[in-house]
Amino acid sequence: MIIITPDKFNKFNLLPSRFEYFSLNPEINELYNLQNIELEDLFSSDYVRKLSSFQNKLYFTKFPDKILPNSLKYDLNFRFTKRLFIESLKSKINKQTKKEVVFIDEFRNHKSLRIYFAFLYSKVKIYLDLKFLITIVVSLFRAFILLFKKNFNLYITSRAQAKNIQNNLKNLNSNYLNSSNIFKSNTISLDSMITIYRFFFFPFDIIDLIYTRIIYKDLLKNLNISSLYIYLALSKYNFSKFLRSIFKFNLYTISNYGISEALNYSGSIENNYIINHGVYYFDKNITANLFWRFHSLTMINSSNSIILSNNYKDLDFLQKNNLNVTYEYKKNTLREPREKIKPKNKKIILIADSFKPLDFLRPVLYNNVFEYLEFINKICNIVPKEYQIILRHRPNTIISEEFILKNNKRLVASRNSNIYDDFLDDPIVIGYSSTVLFESSELGLRSISFDPYDRDIEFLNFPQYNNRFNPSKRFTYSVRGEQNLKNLLCKI
Image (tube, rainbow, N blue to C red):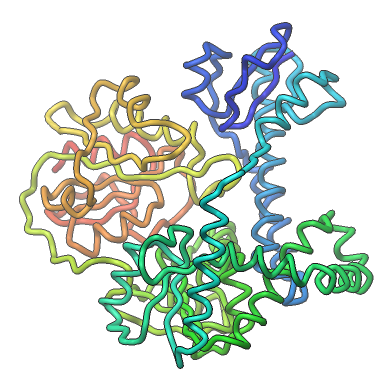
């Protein structure tokens, strides 16, 4: 029997040796010398149809505002996607090995308490942190100060992005950042304040929970939504109403998920700003467009906020999908100012793509980790020898840059802290559906959305490359299939 383990599981010393193991993290498979299995096409057309059908049904299901419907739909989607992915994996591995395959949490199948307890142990996180107690005290003190401010801006984003937003939008009010790093000035920890709120208002939220479970009994039971999930959502919503009643602030956030969604609901449109940090566009492929529309629920689709965006593709997406949201175009929001790149026409390839791990899988729209590695390898095998290939890999993902470089000798890692510094060399930027492609094309770089699997997706609506014509010196192309990419690069 082969046991599949999650991409972040590394407690193999606790598992019985009578089983074989396969990790959803390729680097762990190599590190622990686990099963070596080649995986392609993990989301077949049948699985994609199942997912799109589920998403379409869930998208139009009505939930009450106080259980944060967009966040709930987002989470339910990932739970369903994960289950399909595991089913596909088990089927693929079974066909290759002719062995029974189970996921680590399927106790009824492997019947090993040792495996199941090791899995539970790997998921337990216990924080006995004195810093959190200090955070609560400091946040309470800063909340008391904010009581006397007539108006301020609250940011739910990173410190660097908040600084750029303030500079680009010329926000003159007092600015406060949601952060647990309260040793920096002008920060306040919403997490610690929610903890305080839950302590004092627990009985009231439990009454609200009981009422909600009774009123929406059939709906919640049908979707198997736990009482804990509903309680956490309700307490965020009620906390946000409480916060809005005692403070006057404008909310700036880069998502419509969790506490951001709760604060959006409890405020008025003119005080809520969602700043889009991705790219949305109307895809001619019906399935892909449905996936983008579903993904937009927690990013730019909010009926009680103003969407601030620096590209009109978003507006086209909203209008063609008949999404009733308030939209404002801004030349720049999140980024530091960037000038157009001066053409150098160097034979440099920059791979700056990203992938989604198990808990955030978005098949069709993004690669999973196995597709991501294959995507890189295919490019390296296709690109003519005179090209230099630079990899810009996101840090702190489930696989390391060292692992990728070790397994592909053609790659050179970017040593720049800012991707704009990579852009200055005028590389040809190759990605799958990454936002980087939009940024690079806007700056005048040669940009390629490469689909090695020849799916019918019009990423960013780049024109489809046809090998019958010669490319111009500056181009943006959607390229399907390995042979077309090779043909294009040979013509440059």
